[in-house]
Image (cartoon, rainbow, N blue to C red; front, side):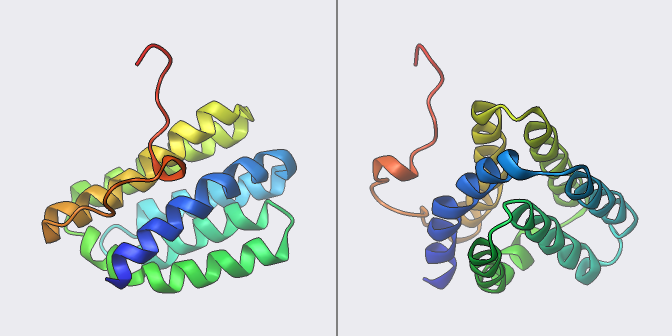
Length: 156
């Protein structure tokens, strides 16, 4: 139940963190995230280090908001997310997908495009949510309230 709760809390927090970060991000923040992604590439054979770097990426994103409470909330969320992340790192395909999601998030953040950030964060969060659903056979939440629903493309 805690994993399901943290996935919902993550959906509430992280997309808005990324959008706020886009307003305040600096070249140093972007470089720290880029460096973290590069380090993840070299850590694909070290599960513990890979997951630590995943956490670092999300903390760097939170730090870019310039809001200490957002950083503290992100730290708390990441502590609770550890169980779900352990489950998600099943093999090299998942590691590569995780890196690709970080790259997509970084590109969207660099663009400053709020809609692109929302799409990147949806893909980022959906990845772990879908693994949770596959592994447990339980949906993350029923029914999804509007604030947790995936953004719809125009014309859908």
